[in-house]
Length: 451
Image 1 (cartoon, rainbow, N blue to C red):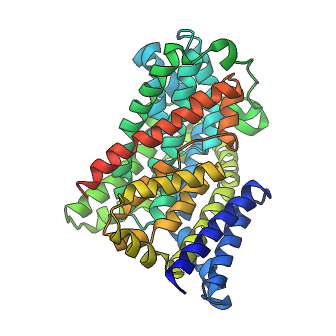
Image 2: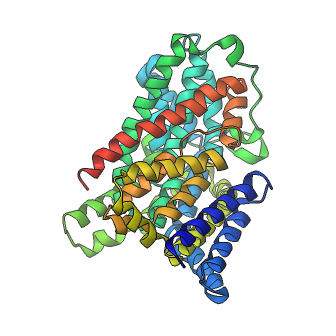
Image 3: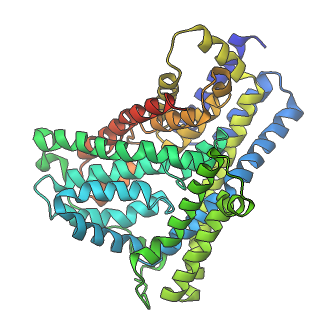
């Protein structure tokens, strides 16, 4: 097929996926598979190979991230029932004080708490942010809502083991340790600078409490420690915070150490084994289980893990079919086509990656889906341009943050749980996360000069 035909049919497939999700209300899993199937059939891949590519793409991505997602979500489920997040926020308030708490909470959510499923993390942390808002000035709600939105969305994309980060790394074949280190370089300044910029304008007349705030809607009964049964779980013993978060920190340190050892060409079989992402997160999960069993009892740990497994199912399915679409795009030869045209022009490739992901997010309204789709589109482009794939992954992630809006579940949860009007949530969530999307490109472009 001609280059124009490949480009046109890929565009039709992506637009078709958007229409199926947004207009026809198809489940994203079904829409992504239909888009992948269409692309395979019209680009001459053939019926048999199309079906095989869909299956193998799904299997390949599951082989890379399936256990990682499951282990991360299970750790988060146990930490949730231990009340770890509430205790951490109280400690941050005591250490940093009310004025700095928006920055401390946002950065902590974006880095340390990414093992917790996003909606669950939001439901737990929003009441805490709401309580802290009352300790600030008349702009407390605006400041805490902005910090929460930026921390949640940036973390899931840039920080391992956030689901978006795991998926981007897998789709672009980036070693997880490398993504972890580069993601931290991006997420820390992004969260702090974006929160400061947005807050600057909100507290200088843009935020109007009389129209931007509303009465609170009570959070669901499972927002407290213990979750789904609506009954707070009694913690038998209260471990220190370092004990609660120690296992997941050990996991991330192991992964990062493995990446550094690889860079330094230090080959040690024992280190290679324990620093492999699956083994490192398994160590973290086992450690978290021991902490949970000591504090809650074995029965409660089993219940928490059952809830975690239930939560991880939809995530795994969505990421798997994202792998199917990426495999089909690669088989269709889009990488060679884009590489040829990009090389012939003077366009800054990483900016174009950002724009593609941003447009997809505005159309679809889901950070995860737009990141998956844009990464699948752009994965074949990295080798054609000689770019380090981690840069393409990070730029796609940054673009997918642009304009979180009315089709996002996060938007409506932030609106109701923090007592904002829709207009107010557009200011704190939509604008705040969009600022983060733009700000993130500065450290990403800086990294491109090194990698």
